[in-house]
Length: 257
Image 1 (cartoon, rainbow, N blue to C red):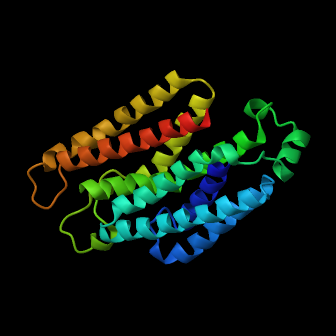
Image 2 (cartoon, rainbow, N blue to C red; image 1 turned 90 degrees about the horizontal axis):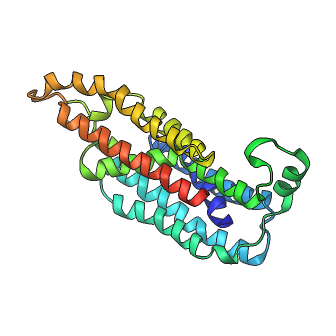
Image 3 (cartoon, rainbow, N blue to C red; image 1 turned 30 degrees about the vertical axis):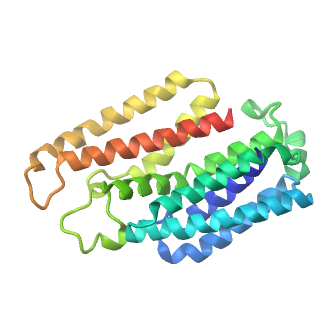
């Protein structure tokens, strides 16, 4: 699944540049970063054959559609299904064609052979290194965008273009730190899973619930408030967002192992 890893490098870089969808004005720079990420990862892995070039060039269409439609959904609240379909469709398409991908060589293979990096990289194929790197990169800002899209789609979060005009605070304003804690949590779960410590990954999931429990309880007194965000809304935001984030991490483990 070398092509998938290359593509996720571009997707992850693009979403990092645009701030995970929080900065619409950065969309142009995000497109450039995504294209350069795919090209750079392909060159680094020595994927220079005509078939590699054609498939990766075609994969840029899915990347650009993802950036356009996800930004539209986060801003207006519409088109979330198309955005998620463009991301999932691009990934499924590249996985389906992965049997034709060339072997990873080039500077990446040369560096891995020369550096003798200790730990988990010992004896690992360069293609697998590229895949894991792309998946980890996508679990940062791209994972946050996916979680936000699902929350907006079910009404648990408001589109950024409507926050100012809506009455009352958004649930995301009541549970702060999620945009930073989410990527950290996913990367930690993936790292523990790749190391064979699935039990420890489960403890991370349990710990998140224990840490957030006092904050959720503090919203109980606001349940009858007209303008405030009560415990029902905040709990829905927390549970749905957490489960989507965990599913992304577990899906990454399935692809990376």
